[in-house]
Image 1: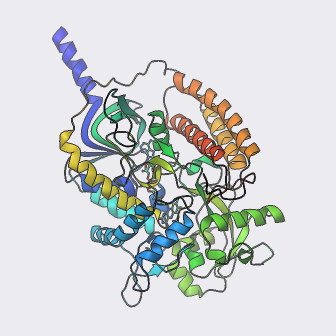
Image 2 (image 1 turned 30 degrees about the vertical axis):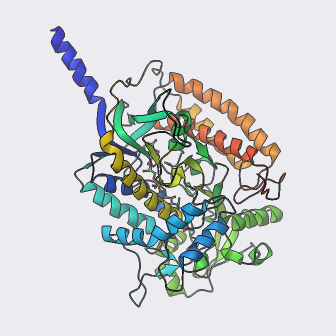
Length: 539
Ligand code: FAD
Ligand code: SIN
């Protein structure tokens, strides 16, 4: 009897413990690309907190940058990236990514990604802000959807990859190994998997892995207005921060200059920069052009400059938005190239062929994140970070448009190659404790979570937005600390839910953004502080 009881218990425990070679957290371009490569060498488990396709990737409109045309050159793409990054890019990384781009495009095409062609049958290239040449490959204005669907399709037909949808990674399983040799900036910590909450049953499963990959995307939901879907809550960054991994450059939050002004809609619908590359022009509400006052590149200046210019015009004039004007463009070409935007605008009574589109800046992209090397290794052993969650050195203080899909695919490949080379030398860490449910018996008070979520977004939007000051940042940290303490208290005693975990993660991430913004005593790229309006090259 005792034996039967023990073996049943053992089976129950085994059920709650899964073992895989590669654990991938997140199913955007970065996670899917890694999984497809790594599946050649072992079993891959992808855990993703919503449906497989939900994430920033699906919403990408403009496209992916690569040097394809004879008129273009690697040198120009490298220079454009460095200029946009405002002195903080890692030149070696930029060169590596730009030079590998054409090959990655060929691989995506061979997987089935469908980039548009022009009348001559050549790949059709668009232009976006900060690019000196046309070099953006796209699928109409729904490039991300095409990429996500194609790769997710490949993953589903791959027998070596298992996908758990609605599975939320709560925390990494890490252990410190005192006395071991520490290589370069790698710490003495190793990762052995993650605790994953099944959002349907509310059980927490211990997933043991030989290699773990964080591919959890961005942090847009820190702000009241964002182009990012609800899943973009910085979970990966918060998990790695709690595990004592290195996080950097969090002050560089990119606001996209042109999200559709449609109050009450969340996320904000993006109006792609490729539309400005196509000839659309920004105007104030009285119809006047203004970008020439801010930069000689006008509407195609890098994003930080355009977003700040719009913010300034709105504040000075007391307007709620500016206009993007396409009415002078060829109407047939316009709707053929941007059918998705046309459909969306029509749905709210705007015909972009005749009406100007009201737009505002919205939180869009995180340039910093989990610090990684050229193979996407984080500072924690056996832990990789890829895609938007990582800080690779490519973007510096301001990402060049359409360089992030490229970064995701290049670094996912590097990470996969590196991890596959080492996988046979790793084994699972067996003595990992199960998730401790103690204390988490109270039903969560949803209203408290929702309220704190809104407060956090208000703090970040009001005090840590496009224009910052020492006073605003100090006010932000004081206010955020109160919500931090309340949320930690709630977290300890409540049954876990996605919303509560996301709130906790966002507070961690907001804290990092503010602290790193406070530490940067200059204005550079996306970080603009009125108390230090100049760049400081001595920093
Ligand atoms: P994502 O695609 O965001 O995927 C993250 C995944 O992680 C999701 O599956 C999510 O559910 C999952 N996840 C998160 N937390 C957890 C957790 N705790 N547990 C389990 N799963 C989790 N870039 C370009 O280069 N060109 C463009 O044209 C372009 N347009 C854009 C348009 C929009 C509207 C937006 C929002 C972004 C755009 N970007 C563009 C940026 C680009 O899309 C993203 O940076 C890129 O797709 C990020 O890919 P990713 O795989 O890192 O993350
Ligand atoms: C856009 O299409 O404007 C977004 C491109 C990007 O974020 O790189």
